[in-house]
Amino acid sequence: MNTLETRWTAVKTRDSSMDNVFVYAVKSTGIYCQPSCSSRQPKLENVVFFDTPAQAEEAGYRKCKRCWSRVADRQKVIQKMIARLEDESGEPSLEVLGRLVGLSPWHAQRMFKAELGVSPKQYLKTHRAKRLRQELKANPVTRALFEAGFNSSSRIYEAENAQLGMKPKTYQSGGHGQTIFYTFLETPLGLLLLAATERGLVAVRFGQEALNELEQEFPKARLEENPELLSTQSHAVLEHLLGHQPSLALATDVKATAFQSRVWNALKSIPYGQTRSYSEVAALIGQPSAVRAVARACATNPVALVVPCHRVIGSGGALSGYRWGLERKKALLEQEHLQLHPFK
Image 1: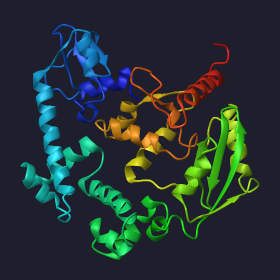
Image 2 (image 1 turned 120 degrees about the horizontal axis):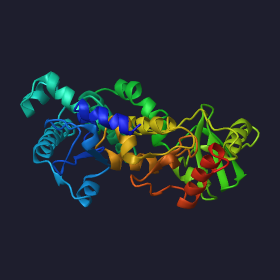
Image 3 (image 1 turned 90 degrees about the vertical axis):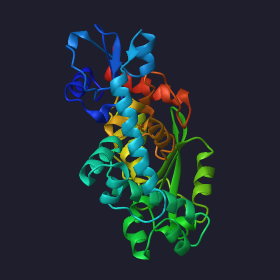
Image 4 (image 1 turned 60 degrees about the vertical axis):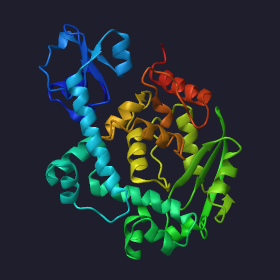
């Protein structure tokens, strides 16, 4: 959690993973810094924390040239390694990446993981999974496999099956051979679609158009309306919306990249009735600079409520975008707050 205590700990330990998550300003110098700044550390009573550099500058503080120059240099190094990982010319070793940026293999990996939260190898795996999704939409499986950078057919089924949510051939064919059961619920927030395979929920979406979206996503799957089969999930969701069941731990069968999975798991860890900013979620998954990517992951969440993306708000407390409308987001947060504080 991005609290005063955790922020001060980050400053004391010069935690570079918290850079770009917040800044701290020193009253006596009039300068604001990144948490990892190597300058002499101030006393807590002289420190003011801000979510963004803009807020610090609006309050009259100046940017620290030392730490901001170093952060910029580090980001250039990271971007150079990312470009090499994504250039489709094979899988570079840590030795190759290290030589590229003038660092030892160990230091290169440590810096990469501190900045992005994953190792270069894990980053490459996620990048190839993303490429694979794109290629499967336009090419046969074999061609898509090699276009995405896989050198054998076994690797696609061993490594990527979990990220696709189903076998690549099935995903490419629009869910051919899959049966998806669905039902609509009347809720205080409007019509809600629940859809699931035998393994778990694939969709929890508000609005009548939700079924059309499901048909477009899985055009060759068999869609079968079956309220009875989904009665357990339906009851849990309705109880949750009424505030009687704060925890909504339902099995899902959703397609996700490694990054999306990490974001969605982080959202599930946000306690009922509480909120986090996009930057706090980015810090929680170890990728403080990935605020926009976190926002995209929230926007593509297919299972509303089960993955509570409504609990993510702007850094200033603003109710920024929600896939199913800001009025629903506001109502959900107010309902949760009311349940926790009934007499306020």
